[in-house]
Amino acid sequence: MEDAYIINGGKPLHGQIKLSGAKNVALKVIIASLMVEGGAVLHNIPRINDVFELLNLIKALGGRAEFDKEKNTVVIDGDNINKNEVDLLFASKIRVSFMLFAPLLKKFGRCRIPNPGGCRIGARPIDRIVDGMKALGVAVRYEHDTGYYQAEMKGKPQGKFIFGKPSHTGTELLILMSIFGEGTILLENCAREPEIKDMIDFLNTSGAKIKQNGAVIEITGVATLHRSQPFAITADRNEAVTYASLAIATKGEAIISSIPEKMIDSFIVHLQAANGGYEKINDTTFRFFYKGELKATNIETEPHPGFMTDWQPNWAVLMTQAKGISLITERVFENRFSYVEELRKLGAEIEFIKPPVSNPAEYFFFNFDPVKKYNQAIKIKGPVKLHGGALTIADLRAGATLAIGALMAEGESVVNGASILERGYENFDEKVRSLGGNIVKI
Image 1 (cartoon, helix red, strand yellow):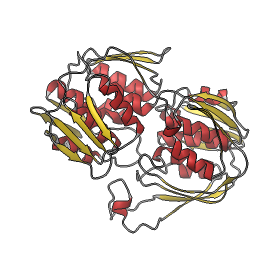
Image 2 (image 1 turned 120 degrees about the vertical axis):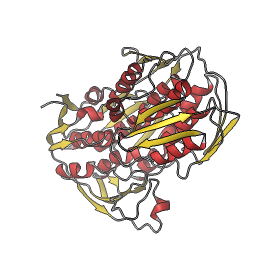
Image 3 (image 1 turned 180 degrees about the vertical axis):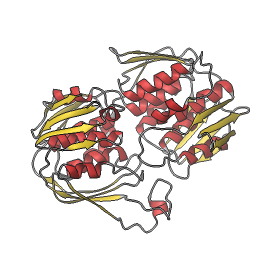
């Protein structure tokens, strides 16, 4: 047996957690660095599998990608990239490879990138991204026989694009496409996640001219980008929610730092409604603790500033300990409940339900197909006492949820697919052990 965690759970966890750099900032800023002449030095980059895969991809294209793992620092330089085609093997491992359209088109004028990989949590809205590229003047063609997208850019990007529905990756890619554009490019109905603001901060401090006003982003083209100072990646809000949920679910406590409260405020609001313990120590340090029986809740996932889709798997396992019936409706992705059957193996009482939605095409943020059958909501009965079991991770956030479930459960559990979890969590087993958890990677 390998690529698994052996976990002996059933006891409260206590301790302090210093958060790692945010995966969803690090990956995008690494790609943005390829568009900076002379490259960039990035601090607080998490040591996670997705980062390693992206750096290997950049090196395969001819770029410089050096990682000082002791200092969590990366040096990126795309000046010597000499290939304009992304290998299918690399793209199958990491979805963010799709954003390489921006630096490769800037350098070569044309490129080929395959359909991206990553977690299978639903058919991501690639069509919105492609439509946006076309609106800016990029010719994009999908090769059905190879699975590659071929893109060509003649002249500088220009124009305007309105997203039909917000797209996180789409917003970031079109920003990168626009920074060397002709005149001013306007993007409307953009995603508003804080990770996007961090990438904009990186670009603006490198010489870009980007203004953001809510869901509207205005980019005025510049000739070049340069950096003289390193850029530090912000803390990971998904990691914060995972360890907060773990502490409370095991009836323990965790002091978590360093992250601005506004990054996790929608989680905190729902946590307090569920009678979860929360205390602000300072502007970036917080104590999460079990203070008594949890209350059942109803949540719906939404793009920022709503309850984040990445948080709902953690929330589900937490609600197995709440009194009553909790409901979770997933509006962002159409395949985000891979953990349900696995948690049932531990004794969780969860069942799928059909939410009463009058206009699903408008209500859901993915591309709703009226012919397809969806499982978009679950009902959780609690509190239940979980027991050990053999579990299999299907996607990154579900992986953290199954590990939490195993740490809550009495007895031994085997959680297979640890490398999937480690795509997004730095030193997960070490951090859990620092809280007193009994977890071993094999």
